[in-house]
Image 1: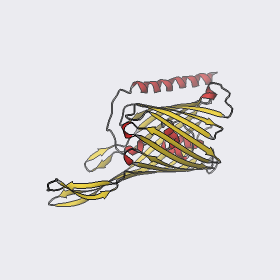
Image 2: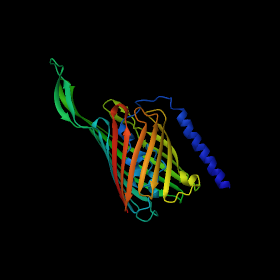
Image 3: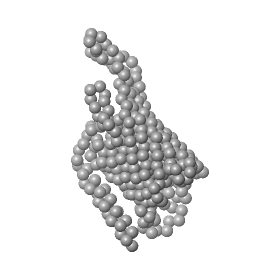
Image 4: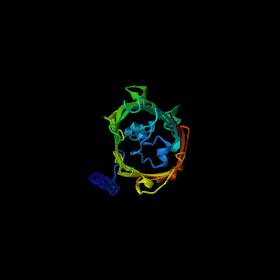
Length: 332
């Protein structure tokens, strides 16, 4: 009984924290960081549940949300690839892989790759002409993040994990005056960032707590200006509602996940996601993003068979129409 009371006190504290976060949604913080592509969800399963994945114990995809979740990977190998058709014809591609060489005894090792294709942009430069400029060339800006991660289960309930990544962004070349002549400059910037997370399974009716800190880094400099990466602190809780309510569900599961986040570049946000699974084969997902400019509801479906997972997510995006995302994962 003492254990259960302690758990319930923890639940009350975390729920209070989540509610406090929601009460702070009126605070405004904008344009406080760069490299915003690091804030975009890198997995269709996560996107279908409004990215409320701080408490998720899955495979290599956990590197993009809470690396501690990778420690709970039940298979020896996990490989995932994702494609996200983002707004304004921007494309995000993600890849992750994790290996569990000794059934968790040595921990779980992972690698990640995230790239962004911003499409083609027509370059111009100032010129003394009727138009005031001339065309230069078509350039293709992009961004990339490459990382390595490690996670380990300290006990059957508590896990920790970290993720170190090298990130960079290329905004094309520009022609600038230097003295009496013109010179071309490459607009490049790079930084090293760290993610860290913990995961705690209470043992009380499937209730799980999670915490993550993402994109911790020093300042990045473009020419004369410096900025920081989109540092985000998240706390979350999750439970299988059937188990939590004591309902005999048999081959069904209904997972509810709630995250509260404190981003550097925006006011406090909340993510609420739900996933219904039947026979651990077919999944229906939905979610809601609280205090996001254009996004609100999210939807997704998934199929799992013989270690192969195929997931799809759909997100209405206000004036930007919609976003669609696909992920294929294989685990054995």
